[in-house]
Each structure stands twice: as C-alpha cells, then as structure tokens.
Image 1 (tube, rainbow over the protein chains, first blue to last red):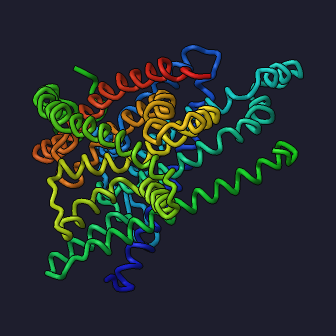
Image 2: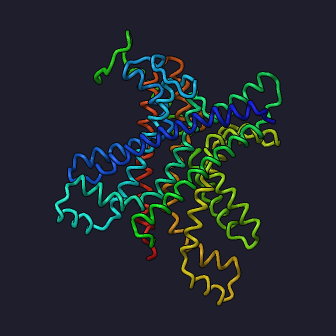
Image 3: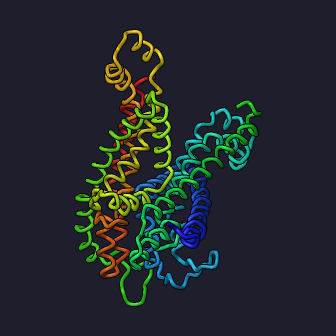
Length: 239
Length: 231
C-alpha cells in the first residue's frame, strides 16, 4: 500500500509539476497555434510556407524527440549551461528541465493547434470576410471581432481534445528527470526495490493512472462546460 | 561546414564526422526496432479496435459499460505510464514480456482504444435502412455484420486509421523508457558515451521527419481515396 506521505508526494508534489508543465505548454501552444494558424491563411505565399514548415516539423518530429532535443541539444547549440538556469516552483528548483518541457510540448501543441485554428477559420462562410471588407474593417479588426469569435465554436471541441493530449504528453518530462507524477511514481518503485521492500507496482502505477484519468476528465468537463456557455453567447442561445 | 552557432569553450558544436558515425546506428534503431514495433502495433490495434467497437454494441449491458469505461480510461491516461504498468506490474501476475513485446502490446492497446472510437463512428454512419433491410431479409448476425454493415463501415474508417499510424510512429520511441533500443534508445546510448547530444538528437529528429512526412502523405492519400466513398 501507499502511505499518505508516498501518495501525497506523487499526487500533490508530482501533480503540481504535471499541471504546471501542462498549463505552461498549453499557454505557449495556444499562442503559437493562433500565430501560425492565422499565418497559414495569409495572402503571402512566403508566410504560408513558413507556417507549413513549422507545422510539419513540430508535428513530424514527435513530442519525445523534440523534448530530448530541447533538453539536451539546445543548450549546446546556444552555448549556455543548464545549471545557470534557476527556476523555483513550489519551493523546488526545477531549473532548465522545466523550461525544456514547456517549450518542447508547447512547440508540439502549436503544430497541432495551428491546424485546428486553420480549420476553424476556414469553416466560417466567406460572406463574413466579404462583409467585413465591405464595412472597411482592417484585417486585424476582421479577425478579432468577426472571424475568430465565430470560429471559436468549431475550434473548441478539437482544442479540448488537444489539451488532453498535451496533458498526457507531460508524462514524457519524467524521461528528462523532471519530478512529475510519472517520475515520482517510478522513483518510489526504485526506492522500494533498493530498500528490499515489496515494490507493489500495481498500487503505485494503478494510482498514477487513476490520477491522470481524473485530470483528463476534469479537462474534458471544463471544455464541455465552456462549449455550453459560449454556445449561448454567440449564437443567441439557439445552438 | 555549417556555420558554428556558438562555441562552448573548446569543442565544435557540430561535427560531421560524429554525425556520420551516428547515422547507421540510429537508422538501424529506426528501421529494425522502432518501425517494426509500429507496424506490429498498428496491425494489432486495427483488429483490437474493431473487436472493442463490436463489444460496445453487445446486447449485454454490463459488457457495453465495461468496454466503454476501459476505452475511455486507456484513452485518457498517458501511454508512458501504461508502458510502465505493463512492464512492471504484469510480471507479478506471471506475464513476462520482453521490452519490445511490451512496447508492441502497449501501442496496440493504446491505439486499439482510439481506433475503436473511429470504428464506432463508422458503424453508426451506416444508413438505418441497411440495418432494417438486414432484419427484413432475416440475415443471421454474422451475415449482417460480415456482408452488409462492416463492408460499408470500414472504408469510412480507413483515413482515421492512417492518421493513427502516423501518430503511433511518433509514440513508438517511448519504448526508450522501458529499455527498448530503438531509434531514440540508440541515440541516448551513443550520446551519453561521448556527449555529442546535438548530433544524436538532430539526426533522430531528421529521421523522424523522413519517416513521418511520407507516412502523413500516405494517410492523406487514403483520405482522398476512401474519404468520399459514400455521400
């Protein structure tokens, strides 16, 4: 069995890191998704190409490879020492590894998210764009006040799924030794084997799986609620 | 020579000779371990997914509930933890699998849950009249599914299956966590011997692009080929 201390180490300490990496990656990923998604619909062919390359590279290179690249290769490429980066989170120094996790997962999410944004914008009838132009709105105003508010409704369901995928993806950071739920769970197993205790892996990994399940369901619930609320706001309650 | 982006003291950032030495090692990991695991995994997942989607339509309610819950659970937990579970927990119950087998089983189960949802959508997209006609013609359950429903449902599912193949290739390097020496395992082992992380992980990234972009094009081809089969 797990003692309370062992459980809280995984669920609370690990959970705090899991959720922080997720939130960081989701914020970065959403910003990148909007940026490159809109860029992918630009009238300039060059900008469209840049967006295409970003999407193909960040999606094609696989989250785990991106993570290893950002964690171990980027410090060498840019020539800084990872030990010099200090970031304190919940009283622990998580350092460069945390940044690497957020950046790698955020880049990956941006690639998938850009496609979601592009699809959402393309689902808006052309008449909306034409009407905005005839009202002489600027491109920025058109996106901000006409297209995006409507596109959000089609984007939300796939965006919510993407959030769950990213949350699941945060388990990867355990492989670069960032102390998230997965890392602390396998740590506990190693420690028990070292101390010749029965490791009881069923309990350790069973509990970890259930914790991830709960977080996933919470995210799903959040986006379902958001869909219901926004549905009323932009479509006069009918949809 | 590519331009040296930054200089860390005395050594070069990118050494072509090192990269050249790494290439056969990581390529071997990719083509002899990671890709075979993926293809085995997707083959099992495609069969398992169909099986699961049929179980979810079982006339017995508890079977439907349990399958539905298992699919939802597998889909909402990380593959990495599932691999740990398979690798470290199952031996307690007398099931011993090599790391490679564990990776294949893990990929198959994880993506089996995903594909079952696609099959479900495909089966539900078969027009109501087809079901009614099967009943009216007094077809047996086997004939109904084998000759009427599935032949119409499966073509609509194929594009989704192609996308899962692409996604699975990118998840296959997770095997490194349980000691599968695939493309990433080989890179980690090599790089930690001489600290040439830049060359090792750049090569792995390139290899992934080289494999996953053609597969994505193949998936897109499946979409145009089967995507609009029925209107």
